[in-house]
Image (tube, rainbow, N blue to C red):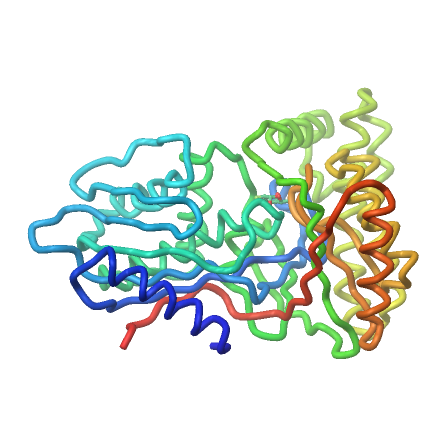
Length: 382
Ligand code: GAF
């Protein structure tokens, strides 16, 4: 654990002292994720290539007061809540739904969860397209399992959190985010096969730095754009009579509606790009990998229509700055750009990207240099 994560956890521990009379006993952390390539492919059984990033949701917890039958939560960024343990936790339409949805999944599995006082915080930006929702779910899930002495397999935990998001946050998401946050490994990205639910480690070449640039446009997948895209992909599959994973570009003529055809074109071509990208990284062929990232952005912007002016401007500025590759990452409608930058090119990248963004009238774009880290875990706090 890095010094900054330890310092953040210690600060959460101080807040817990105000909430609870008991000493902290459990802690948990879950990273955010950045998708290097392969967006809007997971819910049609395709491929994606994410990694965990060193920006975290963190939690620290103490046993609840004697006689309590609830989890008392203080989120340093969202507020306070009490989640009862003696029955169902219905949806509330606020940030606690991610936690309520997770609790409901354990309740259905008859897991006996002890009363707890929990402080949650961290340095993973919210709504920046880095899976803060999945990170919160997985951080809480690993904490709950440790406190309940009821560990489950990572795969089941990831699927449980995905279900929580479907049922409680109302986002019909695929498996990308929860898998990435669960299975992430230090210094590695992973090739996800969303049909087989299999993961292959992919080395990140050492000659590059990974930048995440926040467009400042807060993305909210529950707004409806995500569900609409998913429905359009399903319409394309219904017309083709097969999964887009098994389709090829020649099949596109069979789709009569222009919008649905464009959505399908993105998914089919993105799956091809993911596999080519994994191969390019293996071959240390950074030029090809970078071109695939730019092509992915173009496809998400033009055919899938999930980019925005701010993200398009950032990607153009990254190209101008000589970045190896750049693209929007995640669900879109705002959020962040990811870029691969040659070591030594960081200062130029920061200068040109910041200037390009401000010159276009978009204000400040926060740039973070990230590394690949391990997935969600909980441990005894001593
Ligand atoms: C969001 C969803 F939660 C993922 O399942 C995935 O579809 C992604 O958008 C786009 O690739 O993060």
